[in-house]
Length: 165
Length: 337
Figure 1 (cartoon, one colour):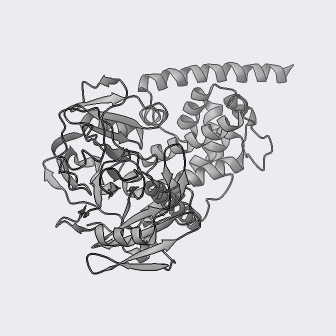
Figure 2 (cartoon, one colour):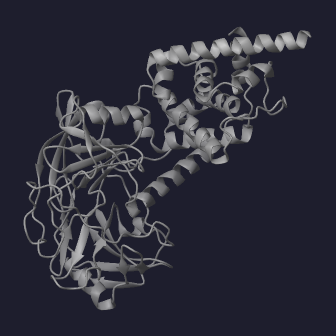
Figure 3 (tube, chains in turn green, purple):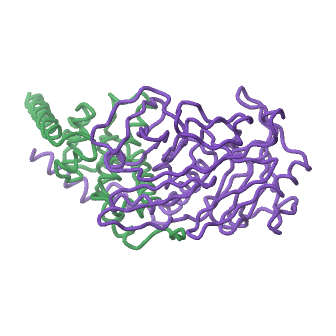
């Protein structure tokens, strides 16, 4: 006969502190907004905590949480009709990065490619983990990433050429 | 790729913002649990295993007959449920983790519904369905045939815990004598009132409110009707912790079109009804077919051997595994009326 468990098991807090920077960074890159990203990050971790008993037994608690967070962001953008035009702030204080042009190019990728790239490079997920988060086959992840890398490469070379001119 | 890897390292090693304090996350999680509890209370969209006893006729003429599963297709009833937006909402109560039986790498879970029906589920241990927590629900119909249909028929809200915990910070407006010697409390709110029964470790809340919609023409009960409810709605707790209701006339139990059993935060729900839309066979599953429910998220599964519908939400992996691996190995439906 079960009794409701108290919130905040110790292992959750450790896991939360470890995963937070990665998920927040990913969502900042995905949304271009620190505020939207921080809110979606908190909400995703809160949902994980609310279901921690189950989430903690999953093969990848982080994968589940990332999927929740990406769904929240998608929903947010759909509500605002901004799916195709996500701004990436250039202000270094709100989006510190050594190379804003990279994120500009990532921002211009189609949604699936953008998410695959962020999960691969920011979250450091394997292709198998990305497949689980995006609910696609592993082969689809590989081809999506290949297409994204090709597009990014062309885009960044174009930028360099424009700068050279 | 190098530029992307470098930029990603920068992004993670120089976080744009410190993590929110853990208390903030806990507060949000707590709010989510409360909201989840309210949603379950309203018996709206959740993930439930739905057992559809399609042949249960809900007319008063057939309420006294035994449930038959031989002719699925007869629908269940839409009894009034508590409005989702209310000034008086119930807390989620305690989670009830039902006992299970191990069978190698499989778990056998025999659940008893509030009407006494039993259902045995079998699933791989790691699915952990019992650990999600179980919450029953049922409908109560009022009066013999010929009475106005919606006088006092209700979809009950059932919680594990005590009345004080389920109605935190509330003082009852009145107490009615109950059949088990315990008082039945009447809580009032701005839009909704509740009769609250304590039956062993369970709280049964009967919503009472005024609502005039296309589906219902519901008026609050009179004082006499509430007193009758208090004396007529009885029940007991089984040895393994389930609640079984055994109302006396003029009250009778009935299936509703809401889930009869809920696991977790809408992760899995069971309804007694027949499939309402064309199904697609699932060759890998244990007797389930898919039911199309475009407006509702999650996976809807129709069980082919008895009229049961199972609604599964949660992660895609959880939905897929339930679809492939859940089995219904026994079912016993008790009589209504």
